[in-house]
Image (tube, rainbow, N blue to C red):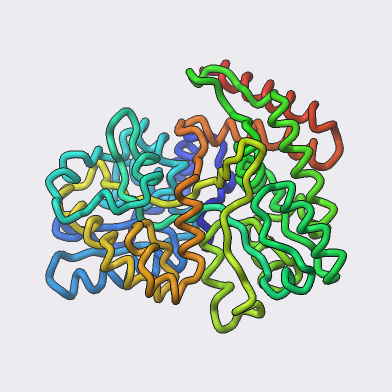
Length: 425
């Protein structure tokens, strides 16, 4: 399952205009399915949570609660279909699944309805049970635009058998992590750990999961100037670069699936990755089943662990004909009962009660570590411009990792490039 991938999108205007042009040439319709006012249409990402969502919609319909149809697409196509629907004026979806990174642009463009009144009126929603970071992330200018659907957070994975063989303790700091990677590689002959260095989003998620714990930051307090050019950011990049010696040779081209594949095939002794990777590691088909431990992301010199947060929400389209009916389904499908039911299909729960349930922690041993990491999670700035900011910052950091420039020059360049983006307004 791929929680996060920015794909080829550079700006909202390029997406909307490009899709509109393509479809005007091809004569495609927004949807081949017929619509009725009584049918709630949902667009979401394919994968385990998507299949669970579709099964839940079928159960909802069969129970006579209302007719719900779910269309599942790969990551990029979900956004394409959503943008197309609004830009063409023929939006056919009532419930919109979204990567939280898309949400600011969706709000700016008027795609999503604020949910505050419906949340307040839905007493059995138990909104306080959702991982707090997701509710905070979905709230912009005091208005909440999404209900947490599924999520993931960066965490540490390690081979319990190899750590025991090498006499290595689970690392709690980044210094210990580097030392553990070195010793594991020397003592076991297995590559010490993974490193996810592919531009743009993969590199950014891993670097900032480390850099924030060093005290580095992206923006100043008013969000008008870059603060990347700092000793803290340089030290973090230096520390991350040292990991390359104990990572696969293709680390600077590796994304989340590549790292997960290396670890699951027994090619690395540790891994830093999103928590949604975990189900594949505990499956019966996994080569490392029963040999994997899960832990909090190591802490930096600040004493804090600062894992990057990823995830998806479900929002109500501003054009939905029956917004209450759409919200009723969203609140039902994100309930603790339905999130528990989704676990069999690879659901990645967003509720604290589901993650902390002892029976669930027994069947999904990474839940305890995920919950611990959620408590410290940090997300990128909530702005429609983030995709473009990220595209400006990541190449500079990548040049520092590859040795094309020094790490100090890399963070200076990243900061200057972000300031150039900020100057565009």
